Length: 103
Image (cartoon, rainbow, N blue to C red; front, side):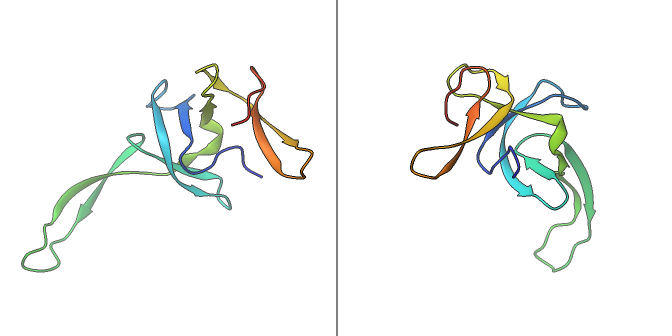
């Protein structure tokens, strides 16, 4: 199981956007890559397809490796490692390893 999920707030630990925070938009568990809002922009050259369509250079978020990200805990408001625990009702939850709060 991955430690990141969609709509998590994450902080970038390595790369050109180191130190920035953003929201997870998409997770690809097979490749272990994540798309984060406002992070890791790449330029894509597009051709005009229709008469009303617009071509040119488009900027979009590119997937980045999951190892370069850390979840920001809502309780302690810091990037943290994630642990997994099974509650008494049998559900599996993620928790912050620094403050033990359920994410």
